[in-house]
Amino acid sequence: MFRDGPIDGLVLEPLKQYSDQRGWLVELFRDDDLGATNRPVMAYVSMTLPGVARGPHEHREQADRFCILGPSSFKLYLWDNRTGSSTYRNRQCLVAGEENPLSIVIPPGVAHAYKNVGDQPGVVYNLPDQLYAGWQRKQPVDEVRYEDDPETPFVLD
Image (cartoon, rainbow, N blue to C red; front, side, top):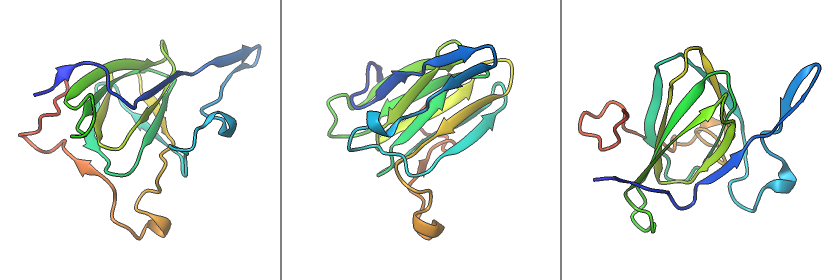
């Protein structure tokens, strides 16, 4: 059903570490670097244990901006589920984290999941362009969840 290939609309940006004798600093985003779309409106951090996956799920309206820089490494799974996309039914996988610090913007309609493939707990930052459950958490959550569907086409290896 899905074929390996790039997905149109993904924005991949290496995260640069600025190091000195105290440690390091990474800019997750800068307002002057952002375009007119995919502007963060909230931020949260999740910690995932080794071998554990989150997703797959997709959003109808929301774009996620994951920033993954370690500790640990994550395999990201992405499936273009947008019927009007030139890369409809493409599947793309990549590894991000300690060895490859990365920011990735995932557009609406691209199903996604990630799995901690390292040997220690790992942290993922997300800066989505929509508020979870809307203003004051009074709207339906923009999420289609697939992880409990035994017939899902979105399979992690």
